[in-house]
Length: 166
Image (cartoon, rainbow, N blue to C red; front, side, top):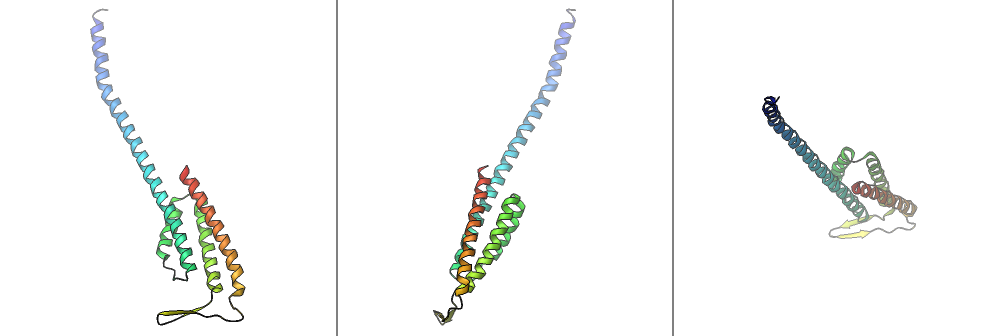
């Protein structure tokens, strides 16, 4: 029996010597994988945060352009944001984004109809005032549409904040 003790001890030490590096390797791989997943989650979170910020800025710029009677120049940015929101955001945010886009279009058309015509002569711009005012019938619907747009935009911002807070 005493002669087996050194053999058993050597066998246990040999098994441990073989198994120990394997266990270390597995633990290292698991740790690396966990770190990679954490980095991917952080990167995705940062991308979503940039997207939501860009969307908010985009709507603010679009509303400003409509109010100032400027030519709409954000078509490419809106197309990119639409694609990204449908690929990256949850369905409820994508749906609300689409609603806000529809309301923006509706309001901008009504606002254009409710705004007196302007004529540019050289460097000067003149507003054409008529009596009776042909734009009067569009002013109230434009105001209502603007309020609905603002409410939908506030809801979208709330949804995006909620998503960022998770």
